[in-house]
Amino acid sequence: VQLQASGGGLVQAGGSLRLSCAASESISSIHIMGWYRQAPGKEREPVATISNIGSTYYSNSVEGRFTISRDIAKNTIYLQMNSLDPEDTAVYYCYVWNPSNNYWGQGTQVTVSS
Image (cartoon, rainbow, N blue to C red; front, side, top):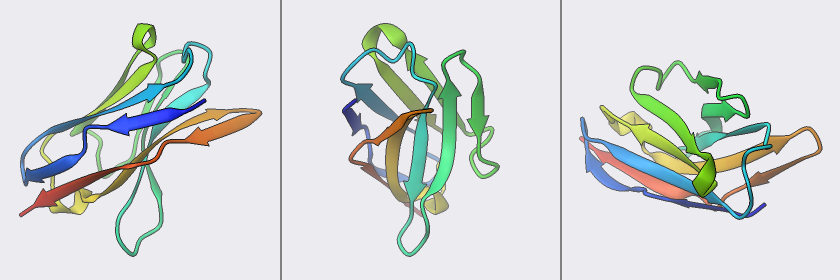
């Protein structure tokens, strides 16, 4: 599976962005898709995931501000990010997890200015 992430950019604190991650094949049977992020000098951390049955997970730092969703017909997942904070500045990576394999997208930069 190839993953193409897009939608990053520069935004002021309090603003919003929507990230997209388009997969090269059907996502209907993928166990988990989601987003990680990596800030400068920090380890990569999970942000949000969505399962094949639509259940979602959010890290404590983004819950209530970010929303993950998917469009199976478009083989795409989204991350709606609201009330952005400079602490959200990072490269955001989408990924796929199945019991037998996993894949990563190339990352998209999100920069939040104060």
